[in-house]
Image 1 (cartoon, rainbow, N blue to C red):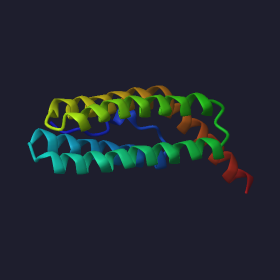
Image 2 (image 1 turned 60 degrees about the vertical axis):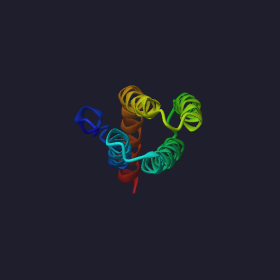
Image 3 (image 1 turned 90 degrees about the vertical axis):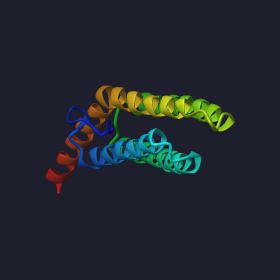
Length: 141
């Protein structure tokens, strides 16, 4: 089984959709490394890059929201921050119990589930707002 971004999760914003696709690709790489028993080093490498990419994505998405005056910016950012806290709690457990790959799978499930719900509930609204603002901006030129 491979993990990939479902078409129903596409937001219609090229920048955000490309980042989400890459994010799900990285989740799949971490999942495959863990499932195939490639060892703690490979799994940790995949998780480290995934973490970097997730938080870079949050930063980029929040910048777009700020730049285009998304009215629900604070609520959206709060969801990102809440997710980060959940992520770090589970990651801390993984760091203490390095041989428990079920925790890694649990972490990856958390990421997939959270992002799927978040994209449907929040990111689609963000994308619609940004796309509309960009269109108005282009027409004003």
